[in-house]
Length: 109
Image (cartoon, rainbow, N blue to C red; front, top):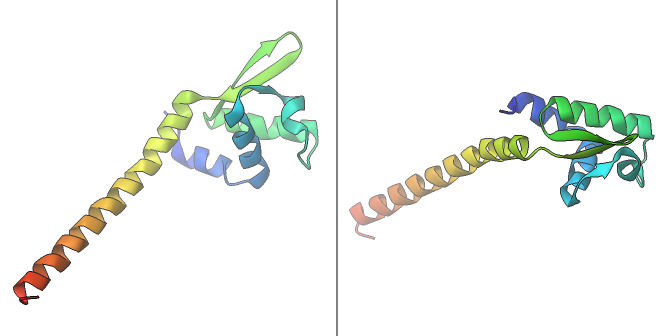
């Protein structure tokens, strides 16, 4: 399970978030991820380490290359965490709408 503070903190950095988003299109090596980013390959490696420690990415070796991918479990856990807020917001909206409707009915409107 993702430690939400770690995962959310890891995604707080714009460059790290860009690396995470690039992995959404599929597994990539550090050199591929670094292409087009305004940081060095070693910096991308450091960002990947933080994402890996937060449970959001996995890595495996193919020869001398390290290939990174999104960690399905970590991403799912993070989504579930945010879905809780969405559910709470919808429940609160429903309760407010029902209360307004009840008040309007009591007032004969």
